[in-house]
Length: 317
Ligand code: CP
Image (cartoon, rainbow, N blue to C red; front, side, top):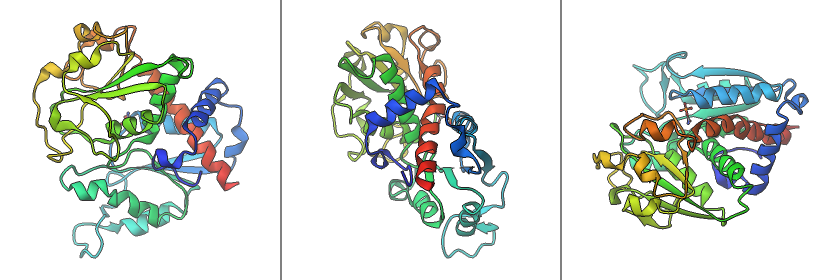
């Protein structure tokens, strides 16, 4: 594997998930492969899970690691080309080129502006980074995708279904929020999960919240209660509108995931990528229930990162 930007970089999801679950059983078994290898983590946006799970994954593989928060820890970075840099101090081109000389793998989190649909959906910033970097780049969440999260999510579902042995119903449910959020988790999850034929996958959301067809071209059910019937997994997430780009169009807090709605399901497991706003996105009673597997998802972020680091390091040897 030469880069990890999306599911398209994965030759076989099943093999990857199997290997990640195997690695979880013996995370320190291949520490020799990281000897003299350095991973750089670059954050243009805040993070708790991605940052620390990637650090842990690198330590498990015996790698060195450094972490950089853009703008807080660095010169103010200029992202655009051709600007007279009166208010910025260093161009992305030099910054990424230099950083890529200080490590063997660069993992980067960018962000969407949620204003310019074309800029975000063409992944202009991430593509510049791929272009300027002299080494393999990993997507730690870009404007439209969050593939490390999706790999951890699929791993978690695999663990709860004895590796998709029986057919199951997975529902991605839009949930309310107070501010516009990126589409990356919803896009990526839909893209990954749609590739697993044992999974009956649907999205429930208000009609203004349909995702870009490139990431999901399946069934939408606007009636959340109906969608929940017989579900085995409920994945809750807020995202802003794609069609009316970046807008919050639904302020209906009845979309919150509640205990009452979970009763419609087949004792479904509750999933969320975290961070989550309690009692806006999901009721305490659901998040604190024994069916909530959000912490297992978060734990699997370590092994999702570790398997990707391993694959990329092996391609360097
Ligand atoms: N789920 C996730 O990516 O969490 P962080 O934003 O804290 O990294």
